[in-house]
Image (cartoon, rainbow, N blue to C red; front, top):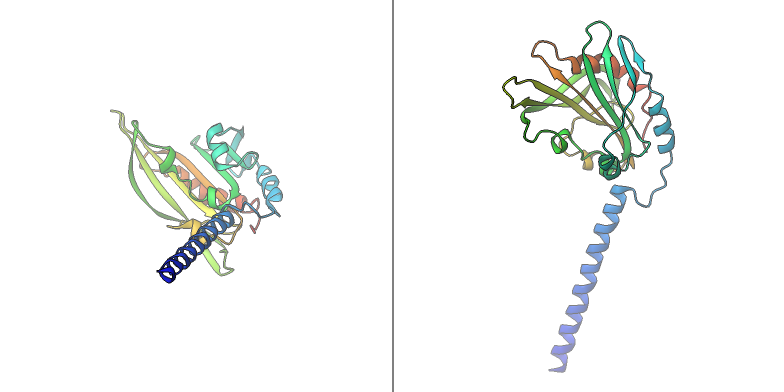
Length: 227
């Protein structure tokens, strides 16, 4: 009988040790993903460089920086780590809204337009990858002839209708990527960039894509390699 009690105690002890080990592993993994214990070497430079993006890029001009919702800034932990601007094309007078942020990979990369847009006034129509041609290197160092971003369209539910197009993607200092699981893909990087461009789409001229084609080469010069 004593031996049985001792055996059960040992099994209980082993079970507790295994449970603690599993919980510790999960905690360490999450801490790594959120970069809780990492010194953000290079992130300050990334923030500063992003703020230097010109207000005029080719035929596109901006009146200056705007502010994101304070709750979004807090939840994404991107205070002083983003730009939000409206750029207008001087020839067509069409306008886009762009947001670029840089921050902890585990937080920034999971935020998508589907999370904060839509609702009663708009319904999600379609989503797919869109290629934006530009010869640069991807994050593996291989030649890449394009940036790939997600394109999501939302249709206005009102009688007048109307379509809003979103483009968004992730970068770690090189090509922009549309990935199904960016958190895993970029988990070795302590911080990452997120770009989002939105504009009304009249069905004839995708002005958001025109902006990206025109401006991504310049934007690339203000995105530094992540760590």
